[in-house]
Image: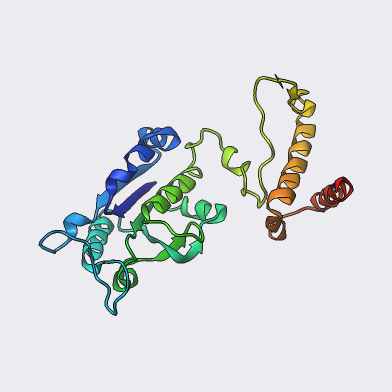
Length: 247
């Protein structure tokens, strides 16, 4: 997959894209991420990319012209790319959205800044907006990093195990079960015995139960939309009874 990021701060991406899983994915040719500086596309004398908003108000607005020209150049390189603006009005980034985007051959991500982007640029060259959450950032760069990392995990080979992204939190609408590693005994705090006996059926059952327990405790709202079996609902009832007796 190829992801091209249009930004006025390309230097922000250097360490993120060269380290850890994303860095290895790029080295292995599984992921090609490019950052394009919007500033050189500005027709303004001083190559500025922002101006005061019509109608007044605080802050500055990113100008349409540099964005349109930068997007035209990127689209010429990636004619079939899905063009995404990281903005608050878009659908929220979820596991399902990330999985969907990972099936694209290429993406072009536009990072807004200041008070936003001239609407004419968005109308002319954006296929959709995506939001990473209901809060305010200083710019779209961090959101683009989050989306890139989230999508990359679903590209075959990036994580090294086809099962990895499907066993983590939110993959099936629930939080992930607790994880443990060595030592087995940490100052008297022990790893659950079921994880040590090699009985994979019992381990799967324990993990499912603990996943339901964690979701019920920390994010009960997720249970409203999670895909639950009859056995899951039975376990949840037992867990709810446990909580009631403890209180």
